[in-house]
Image 1: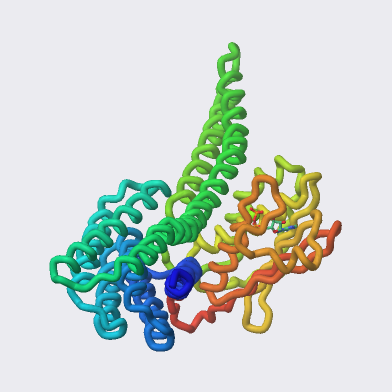
Image 2: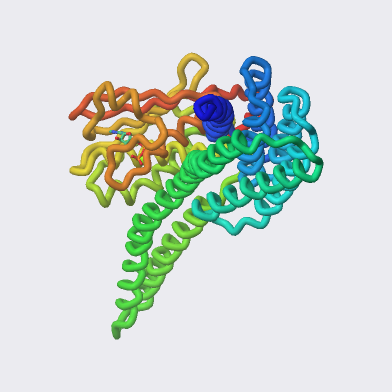
Length: 429
Ligand code: ADP
Ligand code: MG
């Protein structure tokens, strides 16, 4: 009997964990609104329940005394009211119509447990800790079991205590297991989100370092001229020259700060007509200090003088170009040449960013752009993933060619915008 009950318990759990894993695997890959995520969960759960209830042999006691408490408590605690209520309703329905149990014990117990779990979900201190999640889940499961037995006794349900004992032990043991698995995968999802943000701040941090270097130059010059102005016996013309030079230095520093503040502002989706050359020119301004610091020569080669028009969000396109150029510069720690060029071809705008750095072999080329793939000590491996996403959202493509020891060419292909076509905003992520 013990083996039979345990086997049924495992079987139910397998289905349930599969549903949880499917949900947690799908959500980070698709950008859902919060509400959409919850509906997705309900959908997956319904599909899994369909197979489980329709095609598996179900033990009524295992269903009511094991699966229901473990699952209802878990989802109520972790996912809030929509999935919580849906799970409770689905299990109550299955308990009556499929498992064929008496309706009262499981209905009362699971409704109360779902309500308690949902209440906890919205009061949960953030960030939730593993210990707190495991304890709450365990307490809710124990609460369910007590309610179930209580209501059964009150309604004079016949109880098979021996089978209940075995099933109950299985339930208590699987509670931490299930809650722990769910916590781990869910935590992974949050970690990914945090890393996304980390990459952004990392980039801004590095920019800040190079930008403060860039600001210092004009300020030092200005200081020098101000100092010179203090000398005695200067004629009016020299004095005026010094004054103009000092002001120019301060204006230069001011311009850098203004541009930087524009860059670090959170960007909004504003698809409009962009001239690729202008975008490239402003990004080149940004990477210049980085180039100087690492001894890289920046060569900008744009053959034709006509405008290269595309539709997109200026900040996002700049972010992409900046990421690619930064990678190129980082691949040349000993210095080298960074060549940026652009042209029109077959109805596309092509941008080439070429470096003479360490290059990549076939395997490395296949892996770039995958989340977390990095060969750098302080890299996040998210830069190119973000770039790929943004370029795709603009209807474009990213292509790399590389040889180890020789360098890399990154090609960005963007659909060209004809002057007479209306600007149709693309949904960008
Ligand atoms: P990160 O720069 O944080 O490592 P990226 O997604 O920007 O993350 O790049 C992923 C990896 O791709 C880098 O760690 C590097 O190994 C490789 N890579 C990208 N661009 C180049 C390049 N121009 N030359 C050599 N390797 C590159
Ligand atoms: Mg990078």
